[in-house]
Amino acid sequence: MEKEQKIYILAIESSCDDTSAAVMCNDVVLSNVTAGQAVHEQYGGVVPELASRAHELNIVPVVDAALKNAGVGKEQLNAIAFTRGPGLMGSLLVGVSFAKGLAASLGIPMIEVNHLQGHIMAHFIQKQGEQKNVPQFPFLCLMVSGGNSQIVKVNSYKDMEIVGQTIDDAAGEAMDKCAKVMGLGYPGGPIIDRLARQGNNQAYNFSKPRVPGFDYSFSGLKTSLLYTLRKLVADDPNYVERHKEDIAASFERAVVEILMDKLYKATKQLKIKRVALSGGVSANTALRAAYHDHAKRYGWDIFIPEFGFTTDNAAMIGIVGYYKYLDNDFCSMDAPAFSRTIL
Ligand code: KG4
Image 1 (cartoon, rainbow, N blue to C red):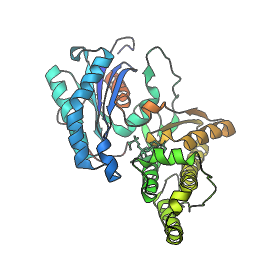
Image 2 (cartoon, rainbow, N blue to C red):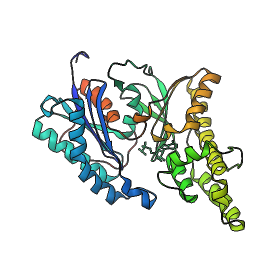
Image 3 (cartoon, helix red, strand yellow):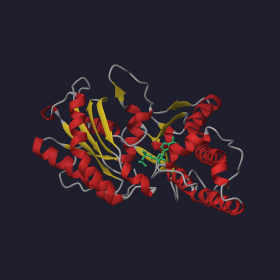
Image 4 (spheres, rainbow, N blue to C red):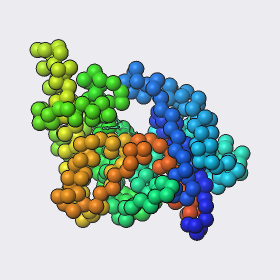
């Protein structure tokens, strides 16, 4: 397949609580429309049944807006790429069923995409009129989201190896749980980030995990926070409110140090200095600063996606779809959604 040929792909992402559709022309994103779901805020986390219902309501207008914003008609589409998993089963089923129905009605092929691969491949999305510098293979990618924390060695568009991963909570989940323990809102990551900017990150020393190899663990850190606060709140019920900036900054420092320590060790052992960052937590200010600091100190060539492509979005599914299209890597109508997987 010649790259000059124009391939139009509609991509659909519905793995958790964001309904997103994008239209790609080759590796260039023409539109990327996402509807979030405020309904979960009052529960302090995503409620799966409510998420599926909201996807049902959002999917048609979101796809419609993506096509309109791109100025592309349904009849111009060459294929439909969709997130097959991992994610919440009810949420995935909405996107998967919609993709199947539309592909069948248009008589075009379908491309299944692994959500985690999408987060990593977000580095290859180009914008109209721009030629962004993309990572050369192989590179290491720290993939940190609400459901996953992994160090992945990316050998090619489709050959990825997990070098290390969390054995319990994900980094984003840890941030969200910290915010919950402190009585803040959801999702907690951006709130912790905002508070941490005004706090002293050396105020508390939360205990760090001792996990062999390049694997991560965040559940001990969460327990350490819980026990520390329990003692302090027993003496002063307003303690958290009065010290929330310092608590957030210290917790965030611990998460970033845990993430960067293993990543640094992986770069040393695997002798790879091209290091990318992906997933929702890559929006975090302290983590981004740590990347820049390591780049300066150790000569890393770093790749940090722009904010719009860090959290769940369909353009990252579309870019994987494009490379799979070039390989004629299509899936059949009976490909089911899957809730858990490894790359
Ligand atoms: O990749 P993502 O949008 O969804 C998943 O696929 O999980 O990641 C969402 C996670 C949430 O845990 C959220 O709290 C976290 O990313 N997050 C952040 C920030 N922005 C989002 N964590 C720390 N700092 C941020 N600025």
